[in-house]
Image (cartoon, rainbow, N blue to C red; front, side, top):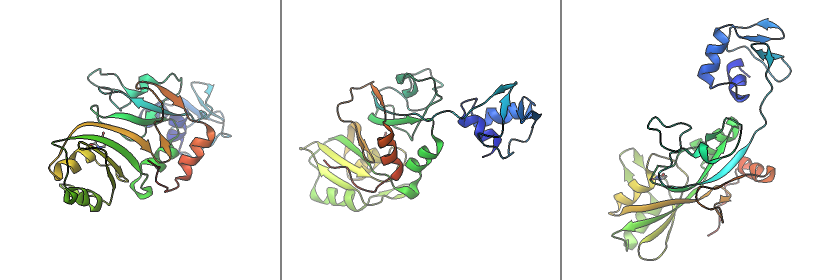
Length: 236
Ligand code: URA
């Protein structure tokens, strides 16, 4: 793996900052200063920063129930609380994808870059399930069919979705894309406004009883299920 990426994975710094640390001549590989961030290294290469050996960080992945008002970036320029602050870990965790500040529910945090890529790349089409409260509600059969088959948004038509009506003003939508404010825009496209939105499932994982603001580290088996990315649809 590239030296800068190795340092980032080991939690030394972000990829960009790691490149600067390398360029500054602070990194040695097997005792020799290396200033090329693209140098190919692994756990046996003897990488050190300022003379201190750098070992790859063990991976940790958490499921978090994000409350409203919390942002899903690693840091917020406006000083708002972030999902990363909800998890008690010494690792450099980052969110897997995004939820709007005004969306609550399931978000994953990890320091496993390959897992994050597996879960967010459109190619893999991991299913996300959302529960929306809509206004004015009572969507017509035609609106439901449009949501299921695909609606035209300004960034293109949406892929087929699973849609279930939950009472007069509730909808459950299961989508395999992750476009910006997608559920809100899909609802608008059929004349509805989302007044509350919660993500209840991500691939095989569900929120279950996790309280808002709480987090839980995933077991190895859960991470393996996520990584295997079975395209099964979570049950209701
Ligand atoms: N769709 C939205 O509109 N918002 C989210 O946060 C996630 C999906």
